[in-house]
Image (tube, rainbow, N blue to C red):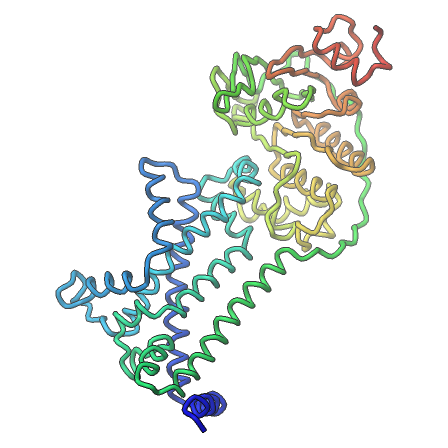
Length: 496
């Protein structure tokens, strides 16, 4: 029997009989790496979330530094930590060199940049999808960033498992600061390296098998999490939809309309692109203002500006409600509502929390809003499992629960089937009939005629004309651009 064969046989015997030394070394390795990853997660996730939204002098340099530290060699980390913890170093008085604590410090330094860089990427990808929507609910930049980490929990788990795999498999840093002291700082990687150099293959092979099993289990867990995150969702049984009363299309208009928002000569630029050009508009209390126009005409930009999500040149002022004397509350339903990877109920509760609603009020307001849109029986379901129409209703419930004075709607029925469109329209009518001021963009001119009291037509970033709904659709003195647009959409209605 040759040495290699004997080594394999002895290694298998050590594993099969759970050799105490093998178990002790494995346990210490898991303990050190798990602790280091927990510390790295605490600092790395916060750092990554902050770097995703922070803007300060030197921000680019900070991001570059974190990304560069991803490739920092483990032996360099070990050397730096050794210099800090040695007797002549600044932290030498702690006396933790050549202890498991020193190994935890070294691995924490190693994995923190990895966690920070990858979590920053996760947050930035999620912010591009729904950052504005969380900010519209009242979330600050850092709160928005941290909510995105909660939203992508599977991604965060993958990042942490990747960091753990790197920590437990590294050898340089723990060798330098731990010293591979038997019974004290011997971990799997250092033992494998030193026992192999001494020719003792049995223990080295056994630990190699265990290390491969640990890393394989971690990689399997990563794959499982990725599969869970991307697997097709089961069809959801639609709860019986409670019919809502359909109020009158036209709510009574006060004799003297009270202005809520005044925009005067506002311009919005994205770099060299002028998205909104010298626009002026007054939004009055009780209005149902519908914005129409071709794609790229500036409708969404105007909605976001009025809601306070975009900076502008010119003057856009919110005026106090009368007789309440406070500024109006506003909420916005986006064309594709961004829903956190939480339950239906928790999505509404998060919106109430961000708006500063007291904890005792959140439950009743959440249930009332879900009941109004017919989703109360689905409150415990994952928001991601809802159909397109149900998600739009959930977005409306989240906005409705805030009890807004102004509701902004960005093409709320786009891409919905006729049945879902009718449901959303009925809900919008109910919201408007309760006294909420509505500002909505749409491509559906029939919808504009049904829901609006005023219509504004935009073209190339300009408000070409803004009139009461009847005067807009039935008048023959529209500006040429608006008349041409209506002729294309409602050629059967207008005379040549």
